[in-house]
Image 1 (tube, protein in one colour):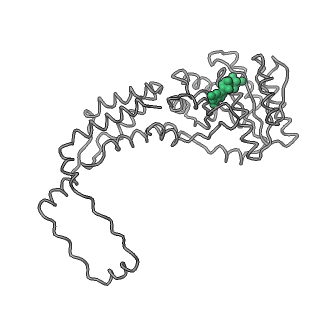
Image 2 (cartoon, rainbow, N blue to C red):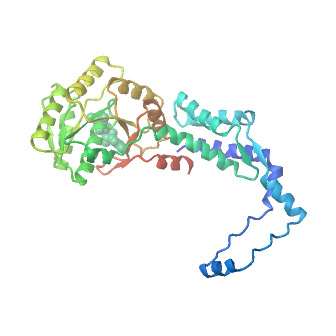
Image 3 (cartoon, protein in one colour):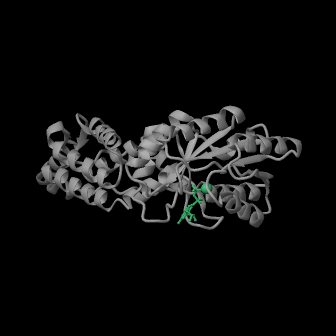
Length: 350
Ligand SMILES: Nc1nc2c(ncn2[C@@H]2O[C@H](COP(=O)(O)OP(=O)(O)O)[C@@H](O)[C@H]2O)c(=O)[nH]1
Ligand SMILES: [Mg+2]
């Protein structure tokens, strides 16, 4: 993932390093002072000793020390080309244009005008700035999902939304398994009454997991099904209601209105947007329109086991201002992992 980004970062390091290459040659010959290991006994003994005279430093030593202390200022011009390259690398990694621009701007404003000690590792400086900029984007408004569930009044109703085939139904089954393992009781609402075979699909999952499912017939009103599931959960003291919905294009106004009704009637505690980690720029528009129709609390990105460039996570988090909560990493019930911004960053820079 992000091979291109790593290449560019390598080039970036080389160019910045080259600008001060001459001075660095001298700086490198200065050995860092060795740390002394002092035992408690030695420490006590040394307290009794008169203070040591400072060591005499020769002329050569003083020059070397002065070189090490010198600083340089990173200026806009010297970064220009390299920031442009960085932007291209982010775009190649499927980060959407406005998001890539924002990240590059963060790196620029973090670096330009700052003083750096000559001899410090420029690649590291750029890497840290880039990592921090991306981290800012993907750590938006994050909240601890498990703590939220634990502290919420039960039943907690969670509605899953997204376009067709992104993995909503599979994710619901994975979430059901995860909640069961944590000791919660779960009810599933078969809210996709639109696609032929959708009710049977989720019913099979419920059966395999030993979970109660509330369903109506095909074509029924999903708002009513989810309402029934919540009523059932209330009456039987169940902890969690996981509500499926039909996939819909974000541009289909009627279906988006139906989704608004589902949420208006049932007032879910959480709305989760499901999309694919492999999605490109189009994911941004989907996320934006779903979020404006039914403001969601976070996203789950599925198919992260496929060759994902990671751009979708960055773009969706930035566009919606909502955290990525989980990643789907395969087709079995256990293939759901909590999203960890550091995990993405580590993969990005590994
Ligand atoms: N490799 C992989 N496939 C997944 C993942 N999540 C879902 N799928 C597959 O994606 C397809 C569509 O999933 P489904 O849950 O029916 O999508 P829905 O239309 O959004 O409900 C199915 O073949 C799933 O097995 C995942 O994390 N990894
Ligand atoms: Mg489905």
